[in-house]
Image (cartoon, rainbow, N blue to C red; front, side, top):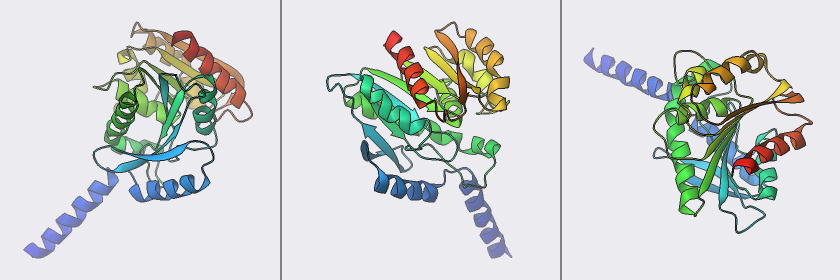
Length: 256
């Protein structure tokens, strides 16, 4: 009987650990797909202390530039996602920004949005590794640029102990989910750095509905916070890629 109990306990522990871990097999599949089809930039692998993860490094058109951005995707996808992420990681290089798009933690396709809270403890390691890599290459300005749930993850990261960065651009950020690591509204007052909160007039309901609350909460930080709505843009800036890049570039270049 004791042996059966031990087997059951071990199975439960294995199941529990899998619930609280990024889906590394899915990340591997994404990496194979991305590397095989990559046209711009170089695929590299960074180590977050638990595993290696894919990143795409794209050099600035200005070889002397010491400015870099870390680009983060939304729920369940990869660092060369064709909407928002790929346009930014390539487009920003033309105005002097070196870019590093990174694989964020993911769950299986059938996972609910709220279930992602269980793997937010993987976020700091990923961002720490990306920032350390760029600092090690001599970049003295590092800005975090994130889309959708990537913005939620970044707000979580910045609201706690983190490696210093110069700014945060959130694209399509919602107010999050109250009472846990995805509670963006409660985290915004702790973000003591320049923030651009960028979204579209046709964005997701949760993004539009929380816009006023995001601005109110961010104001409590007493930092440089800008909220900007792009007319006609949806959550993925489909057909509005040029407007997306222009808005992010304008904000970055005014400050850095």
